[in-house]
Image 1: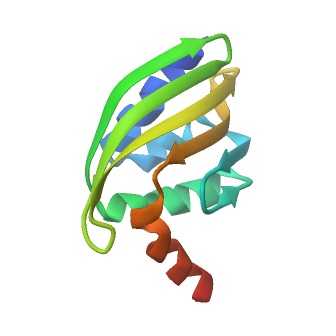
Image 2: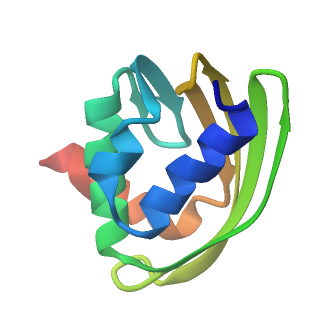
Length: 123
């Protein structure tokens, strides 16, 4: 069984390569993602949001993954283009068991993304 650090690394390798079908293999069916603007209670909701983010992503640079037991912290720099042009440093806490990520909590300066999420609420 892969370690939590390896699971998170493999997940982000797939995301950076924009291979969300492969990324899905690392997500538990009961995944909960807690972000600044949204909480997703299953992997399909999360991947839908991630697909939208990737549409404006220019660069996704994973700096480091630190893991202990079922916990892993990942730090990355995300460069996005209009309508959310920014370079954002992101910290995420992942929890995994049995080779699958089951919880993610994200922290970052959300000001550049606020309008994008507000627009989605109006639709």
